[in-house]
Image (cartoon, rainbow, N blue to C red):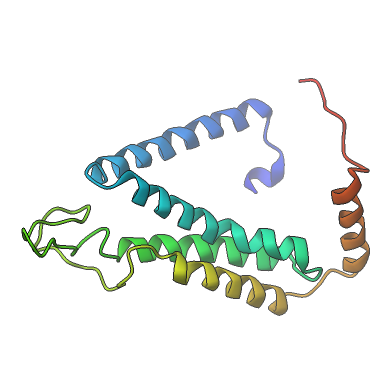
Length: 171
């Protein structure tokens, strides 16, 4: 995408390293906010994000011959964005108060801060079906390639037999 794919290998490595640092910083900051949260619950949120972004694309790719790149992009980006948005505006981040003690059970400990409008603590119930819907809409609104059936048959043979796979290359 950048420079029309004409990037030297050492530049790719630099970009990858910078990306890892940026993602690491976000993970550390997010972990600092989630310090008092239940680990099993945080794992459930991570699975909801992963399922929202990946599950529809995997299922559609395996079982729907017409599924195309546009549908894959819509389901991946739409599922990921909707899941993160719903987490940000859920009681997990703000507004969850323990009725017995009045203490905040959210990531933001200030009980006067409440911007949660999404009622569920885990967004997967909404974001995963939304990602499936977006994948469907993206596919039916996109135009199929002229030799789509031929490519689909070739990919099916490759997935079942491994024929046409490249051999390992030395670096």
